[in-house]
Image 1 (tube, rainbow, N blue to C red):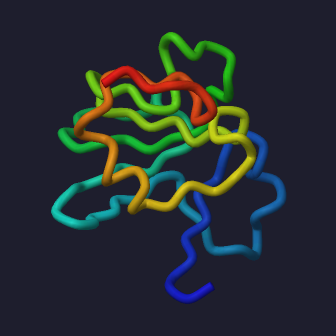
Image 2: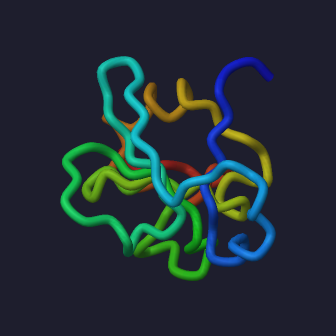
Length: 110
């Protein structure tokens, strides 16, 4: 893979990362949109862009679905994206039109 790799740590990663460069959050600007990348969405403070997170898996899809257009959150936990990576272009192309999308293998609400 080309590009810069930034490892975002999760709640089970701390003990393994002593020699690996990592962070707990990162801002990504892409195609005129700003994203906050963070493991746990509950740790987000003031942010006016979209939040891409994990941590919630499929425990509460009504609160943390794959895409929540109203709250501007994208949950990329593996259970919600069918264990398949999702490109940032895929997300950018859909985030403005989707109100609620529980999981990638279900129908979104536009």
